[in-house]
Image 1 (tube, helix red, strand yellow):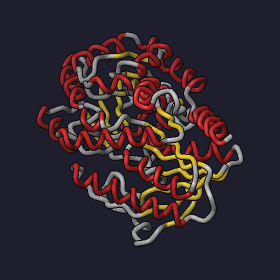
Image 2: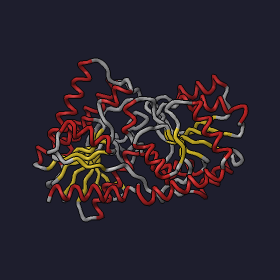
Image 3: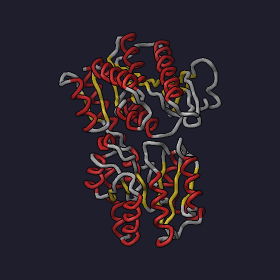
Amino acid sequence: MHVLLISQYFLPETGGTTNRVASLAKGLQSKGHDVVVITAKPSHPEGVIWEGYQDDGLVRDEQEGIPTVHTWVYADFEKTLFTRLCSYLSFMCSSVLGAVRERGSFDVILAFSPPLFVGLAGWITARLLNAEFVFDVRDLWPDLAVAMNELNGPVKIGLARWLEHFLYHRADAITAATDGFCESITSITGPDTPVQRVMNGTEPEVFRRDEAGKKLRKEGGFDDRFVVTYAGNIGICQGLDHILEAADRLAEDRSGVLFRFVGSGPVKDDLQREAKRRGLDNVEFHPRVSLDEAAAHMAAADALLVPLADHEIYRSFIPSKLFDSMAAGRPVLLSVDGEARSILEDAEAGRYYPAEDGQELASNIRWMLDHPEACTEMGENGRNYARTHCTREAQAERMTAFLEELIG
């Protein structure tokens, strides 16, 4: 097969989306298929196009052996509805132009959402190039945007839902991250459109960094503390304020607990100001780092946080961070009910607490401090479960088989 992947986020940027798309591209290549990725010029999360990609035209290169075309995108650090729309619409247009300018024909156009406009770019490209259009859904939009209060008003929401239904009905096939997503999509498309669950998954060997974690603990001067780490995007949908509440509650009676944030995002400055206002000396903030360094920070932890905000929609989500945290071999503190909780409990890899509940988070950390042997066992359980059930390689094989069956 000749497969064109369209994703607004890809290497050399880091993050769950880029790593997953790269794993999928490599999986397709390993089965003998030709792959090209169309993506935006890197600008995330700073909102400025990176040096080396600032030319007006297309930038062609190889990212980890994957032929990649970087197209122009509107970039702005300020994340308002207007600036996001400008970013999404600019990439939608430039990605179609970039795809059409690529030489050769394609059998499949695989477009990754969110944002929804990437799906529209995929559909247009598939029609222009006479290829099958497969729509990959990682988050349910516009429901998520409404839940995050990024989208409001009946007209805006109505238009977004129209676009969502338009794309679902015109896709030749759809893949989605969870069973809940698949059920929601099938309720719109009916039974005639093939819908396949393909989870996010992880790369266990990337997160097996125990020695690097020990070194980081020693160098950081927190070798004798119980470290609770959140590593990832510091955004609205994660609902991170309650972590500071837990830190406040534990500051006096469990002074050995240290909370570490590793990453960047739109609410990081607010969290730092709130931590300073509360006078929390048991909270640290660290910059965004490469995947390899993030894995070391995760290995340096005694427990890893996987939170989402308190909203009904998140019960259908499985954060990719859950798989990475289990692969790191550390017990997980999860505040996502539904499928994610079922996976955690099936793996016996950590403890669940209600979303945005700082008191319950503090109580679970106290339990972990009092049960160190159980924590070690949960960490090993998670690592074994991730290696057996949740690898990106296995998910790439699942996607590849689905596309091969579609093409026949």
